[in-house]
Image (cartoon, helix red, strand yellow):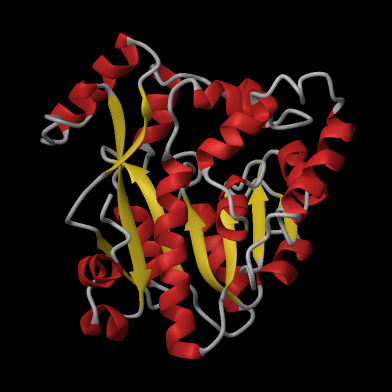
Length: 295
């Protein structure tokens, strides 16, 4: 099945390729911060709540495998006593502007080490951007990480080793850049260890998540879309991007009022778990009861 988000990328989506694989994350945070990119903030709230749920049930915090991990922003928000706005402020600071990437990585490693939460989750990251993954490792954000193009290549042995024992697979801004093949290959890595993880993914509203859900179903996972709300991802860069998204939504029969019409990409949250877990506590109830959506 074709990927509608890939077509959107080609036609009118703002292109950020120039900041995704730099030697350090300053350009990434400055560029996306200018558009008020909020996806990692939503992810940290939701993923932390899911980790607490699993820990309460099983006594241990599951390992996280973060797809499209970039410079480790999701890992930072899960493991550190920091907010997304703290990260925007740090990487926009004039005090860091003159540092080389190597000096910034050393500074970040010290900065992050002082702000680690008690018993943070183990986070493994993978991304096609090798420089970004390398930086996240040197800064101490990722416990393990690999550069992989899973849409076109089989997983490396390094990813297979690192992914074993994963209890939660996360994606904030990557669905559409990665598609069925990536999810198939990731689940095969984790299943090699004899377990099947939960999968929590944010996807912009006009993306049809059904092909991915079908892959996850083959591994025994039932996918629910949170029905109680959507999540602001970022502002549109220009009117052309907004107009194209509104056309996509109209074709899909979706109402943009109060969402994309107001100038923002909005994303849905998809949570995939076993059929038994879904029947016991639906996603709306699971996350609603945690209070994580009350903002």
